[in-house]
Image (cartoon, rainbow, N blue to C red; front, side, top):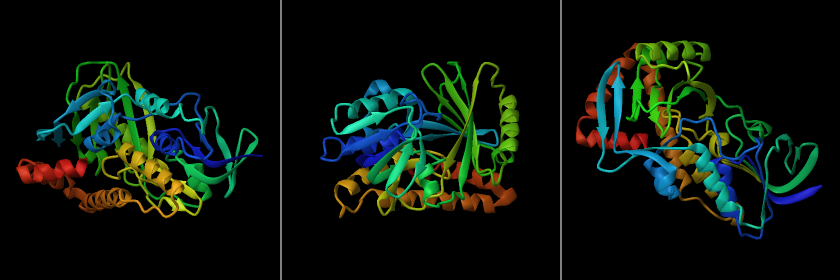
Length: 341
């Protein structure tokens, strides 16, 4: 049986960041990716200012940046503005490849693609019939994490996202649409990229079934006369049920840890932070993270906000409309940008 100090399952943002921080250490690291290519992920490609600042992304990887976002509440539009850019779109494939290039030079890291873990235990996994032992295991394997399943953690809070990728330059604004009769407490979006747009929506299936969400989405698209005839349809689950990161010698990061925002659906920044902090904890057993508390606090705030909106029932429209008016006041506009970011 081959043995590694650290096995990382999943080469998304969290897994790649964890591997990067373990690079050039004395630890023997194995990074596994079930797909045949690292980089492409089903994702709207939106990122907040915090994520951009933390990453230090080269300018060519940022497709568009915005210091204002259009908010639509029941077809009434307003604009959320800032002195600095706070909303961005990136190409997920190029982003993943950029992360990958940073770790390829490390001699202590082995990368395997087309490698799916089918069995997980407390000190070994099985990949393609091969048994692989480890001292530490990092679950960076997304919302349907096999590592999370092994730990006996059931996700009580998943969000379903659906979108169309449409080749067009017609839409140039970063737009968010709150329309409770279609999306309950959640929203639809239009995120422009260089050669296409992501137009999508999301909701908790406990409150809007996947079938109903798709029907509502298509009705909304029809209302706005958005042509999807040549678009590529995609659906993706997002885990927003955070239960912790460390479980003895096993760690969960990013979506696998349920760190996706239950309000915005954003998860890249949380994935990066949790990946890095996991690596630091592995390298230094006495390490206490100074970054994760803020990530967890914001996650709780977003969950409280969602709970409040759900409990508002038929008053959701009034709730959103009141927020839209408050955001016109500079003090509350700044708070809204902080909340989203």
